[in-house]
Image 1 (spheres, rainbow, N blue to C red):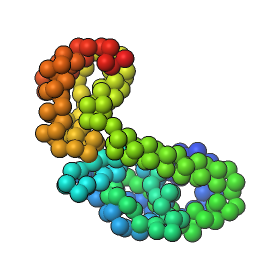
Image 2 (image 1 turned 30 degrees about the vertical axis):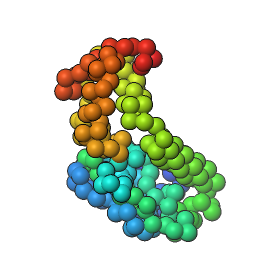
Image 3 (image 1 turned 120 degrees about the horizontal axis):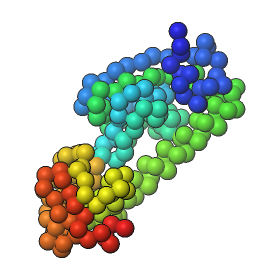
Image 4 (image 1 turned 135 degrees about the vertical axis):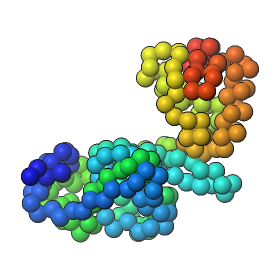
Length: 211
């Protein structure tokens, strides 16, 4: 029987017969880790999507980052002095995660240099991603966040006309704002002649703004 871990480059030089792991499947919209839970295991997402969420002092739900299959959870927390998760992690859709205990990860880091390099790179990249995401959410205006997001959608569709694949509620959550705030900002941009939209269908009227 093929070992699940063979699919991941981090484990390709590891003797998988010596690795004990467990797997767990989380239903859509269920909590994977609560803010304040201690991190004692290293998780690898097998399928689905996990999102890191934060509720601010005004009650706004902010999606800080999302991770899909092959991404990891916990590497940047399990060896910290305070190894509690600072934000909630939930399953955006049905999500499967493979868990390896802290002691096994420690042994692999001590005995397998290639694994250690992968692990440290993963921790550093995850920390950079979260820092960059939080910094942008904090200092970029709502309008700028909308423009940046629509630029990415334009690029992925190679067109100024497209349908959004997320709801406005989910879009607002990713930005950490109320849906009404997003709607007001979109209306202002529409009045400025930047965009035209109806429901999920968008057209970038002033293409210079989105270049």
